[in-house]
Length: 325
Image (tube, rainbow, N blue to C red):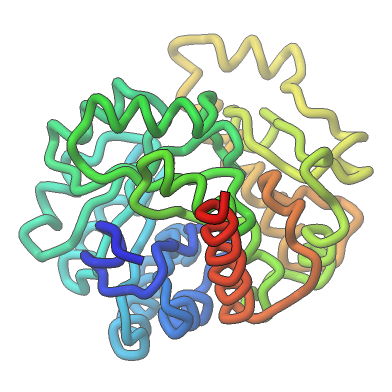
């Protein structure tokens, strides 16, 4: 493979093991590098700035290839200033910004040699981050897990390709090597893949969470506004069905109030993340598990190396079949 992603970060296959809240850990990132790809971890996966700094030191000392940090750059990240200072002190290979303006991140980290890659869901925002100096964008499509976009990849990637000059990385609904080939064919320089890595041996979530990824499929993914106030994809477990996916009337009224909207969203996000954290790391019937429809293709618990090997094998097979036609 010869793409901007492989050439820039000297990886063998153009995959970013996507940053997943409460799922990603340093062991996953280190093993992703050993498997010939690169991983990214959310800064908010660490409870305190000290924990975050220790993780940065761990990655610097033990990850032999490229690695990245996902930074939430809006007000929901109460540690944003501290996290930026620590990233200046211990610069990673790249930073993926989400849910806000990357302006300050670009200003502080670009001169440290850190590549800034920005999550985008539409053309307007892609143009904005390009004008601010972003190195690349991640095109989050309507098949993504978590906070997804609204536009399918078949439209979003060619649309961005026509109007921006910086590289595009595809994200959402990619669970096979043939899926990676399709994104490359559309014009992407690589793929950001998350959900298929949740049931990896290196993941620290519960066996119940991993088994849910294996036992449920694309038809079991629903959008809920109850976690963060913004639609987010989760597995439609019996508890999720009982809970419902919509905010109640009182919550909807509060979130429409201009003065209260920001604070209600922050409170909803905090409460939702606590529920997800409990479900991810302890056995409970109250299961709210974030995932995307690409779980359809996860059939067993495997090492990250095995998952990557499957992707490569499927990619090569799909490519051969394409040329045989």
